[in-house]
Image (cartoon, rainbow, N blue to C red; front, side, top):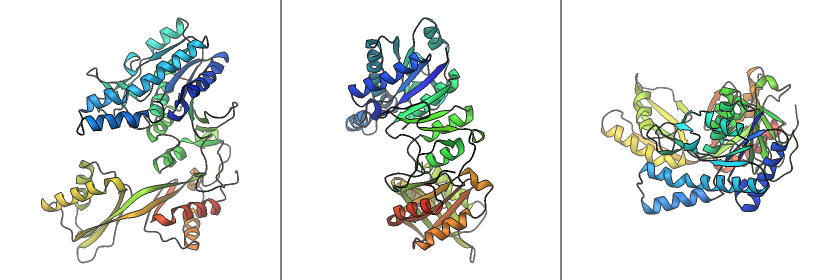
Length: 412
């Protein structure tokens, strides 16, 4: 039988009624002739509750025990989904990560998938099982301990299973009905995309779009897994949602596919550092070791052997960045006059594979922002992306202006 992977997020399985609704969708795919691998998240809010219990019990918790606790939410959902399917006379079994086994690294809390052997599940499919309900977000380390994959790890689990089993498709059921040109809560003109290329989705996910987890899109692109994003709250036909696929599968695209934003950004500037070979390594090495996720980097023109170095990072990581720079200064690795943090900025980006072959995207973007009186603080570009840092208070205005400027409400 062909295999289909179906993933249900936390809001899709938040209650027993929603689990029953999801199970009916699974039952329809079984009736269509598929053997189905269902990947489930914990019921909405349960993971945060479990993390809260861990932090209250042990603020500096053993990472192995942290994983043992927080992975239990998915196990509950998997068992309830399997029981619901059995009540519908659909042969189903729940599987925890270690039973598959989904083999991962030993990095508890952020493990990476290394291998998914197919023998166990395929044997059970051969014996008449029609649905394997797998607890997402979790696996097993070489030491035999339960591991978790980090936030959004169930998306990654689903794509990894689709790749390992050669599934026809991987359907991601969530609380939105597809991928939009921008956040509909910010721009009422946002339009749902029928198809989007892997590269565009990867950029949008990494730039703030929360529909899919970045690692899941990376995996899908590497193994050419066709991803479909659907709403679990609507009745869907075979063309519903948004298909994430190869660029070659899309007949015609707008130059810009979408506008993404990230609200919680900070701009940090080291004032008057020595402009010498190795200074960038001396700055960003300690930041990396401190776990600071640096994004945009700009170095000003040097004057009298001194320069300013600006970078962006998440607001939550500003204290770590400040401490890392202070430690580097005290140890003599770098010398700077001051470190200025601006925590009231946002990142706004336009993304589209059409940028490769069309000139003038940057000019139109900058002209649009200028017309609205939005000042640009930092600019970075890639082959299919332009990102700017602006004052956070202008973020929604900027998103709406760019959506209008590139006429994203209109299909190609």
